[in-house]
Amino acid sequence: MEENYYQGPTRWLGLSSNLLSLFGFFLVGSFFGQFFGLLAVVALMEFPTQNIVTFQNQIMDFMAHPQKYEGGFHALMALQWFSALFTFVLASWAYLRFIEKRSIFDLNGSEAPGFTVFSWAILTVLVSMPAMEYLIEWNQHIKLPAGFEDLEQAMQSSEKALEELTKFLLNFHSQTDFALAVLVIAGMAALGEEIFFRGVLQTMFERYIGNKHVAIWLAAAIFSFIHFQFYGFFPRMFLGAFFGYLYVWFRSIWVPIAAHFFNNAWTLLMHYLYQQKNISIDPSKLVSSIPWWSALLSVVLVAFYIRRLLTYRSES
Image 1: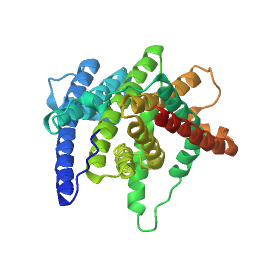
Image 2: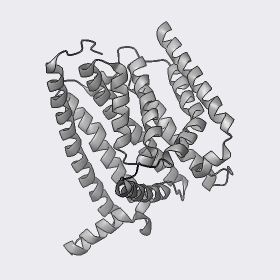
Image 3: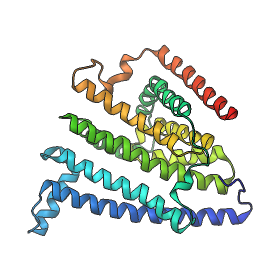
Image 4: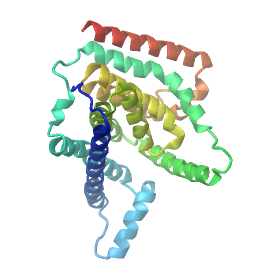
């Protein structure tokens, strides 16, 4: 990683230019991701294309209410797969290739972290979950100041729509559905988002701003904001910041990818086991089953494992 940070007014000009370039690739990638994703939806759902008005109405209705359609789960997974692939992975590749003249493989350092690093990173995510549940519960009950009622109502409406979509994506009817969800929601999401937000965006902030902590938290805030789930903003931002520190500490994009994958896959697994009646606790109502002291213990364990990660980093 280049440690010569840009100084003076030039760095702000360079940062603005690179951000605009990255945003442009993001928009182009998003367009192509939606385009190919919708082609997959049309193919899987076999929507008739003879009447353009009817076809457009079916597409719009499917996007708003995919749960109404048989096979909607698989079609929506295909849409999300292409969207994540083009919006994050290929947009990052294009930006690095054409703007920074680098390879996407340059996001890893010369020395690969050992198995211990991956294990402790994943354990840190695991032990953080009780505390995160309380943080999620707190975030969901945040009230905006007086005068922002319209904004709050719009946020609540958006949150409700996304909550319905999440329930649909977490409703598995077979092992194949579960495996597909792991591949898309855990695998592709972790790969694409970590490459884009940690590998490219955070590194850009770090290079031009010159402060690793500012770079980490700024990228984490954007990472959380872009999910447009404002009542989960702070938990996602803290999680993104942890992924950011993992990348700064070990300079391997695979470490935050592994931690991100585990976080998403664990959530999917808990919902699947609950639906199969292998566990009795509903993951969507987990906070009511967790005693307050477990959240405090969770914070202590997170601090312990982060200390182990830092110790291992200093020794290696």
